[in-house]
Image (cartoon, rainbow, N blue to C red):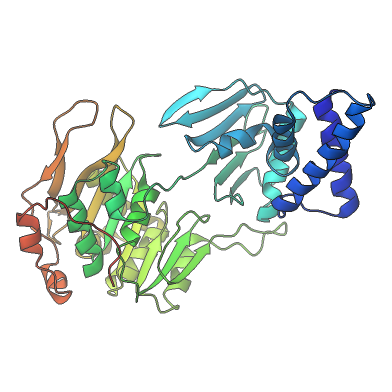
Length: 422
């Protein structure tokens, strides 16, 4: 047994004796590790145990093993790592700036399952043969998804998405190069005016970050209610209620779906309703809410802004046979005002590909759309975001909010901060 294993064993024994929960009391766990190291050094001087060549590295390793998620913890602590996934004990991958790489980390099969159990312990979510899939939020805010064998071939498949929110408002996206000041000011004004905005894009295109940045423009006097599969959004408003779904119990009862959350949100006096991601029949409940005049924002997976509009006309049909496209298509046209579509440039930078206006008109069953901003050109940065020729949707709402949107769009700003407005 080497020095690190001895220290880890002694720390685990003290954790057991003192009834400490390292996951909840990180400071207490660190003090305990320091205490064990001081005693270990005293014994090493007397030749009773092997000498520690790098005490700081051993301390960090033990903390990761006892209070963190073992060999995966360094990747969770690395700010450059955006996602970690495990296909098997010898296949641990990470993504940095959108680029995947196979790490040198190798786990034991038993260690992998033990890590999964440890990750799920504080979430209250279960994973077994009868329920081989789980979606949960780790204590650090990371989103965890696990699939068990025999759905997978041999080993659990683990995905940990860190959701590093690099922007709390639209001005920060401008600084990152994802958005131009002109487009940012328009989107800021659109949120303040109460337009309904759909954020679309592929996986890892930055939809959650964009949604969070848009929410930074919501007036601080408004009440925001969010509905998510698992908590991911970090809304900075002062009056926020965040809700997440719940799995069924072992008896098959107690499940709370996203549809249920949307319905309950309408009873909570919201000024804005936000759905983290629309995937299924909850799209119908969202349309009902927006059709009642409640401003809303949501995200949706799609390959283009126009595909997002088409998808939003299809998803509500999953709500039941009595829901038809004769209701859905005109409702989408009248309720959705803007689609902000995101993309990833060849350089790996996430950016806005298009801001699409939905003016509310339908012709031969097709919703009319037009580009307010679109990216032109090519190259590593993905081109330049320029003003399109579309008309501004819902001009009366801008006027009601005291915003001269025609002037705002006609004169691109040189430099003006975009942030939270009262």
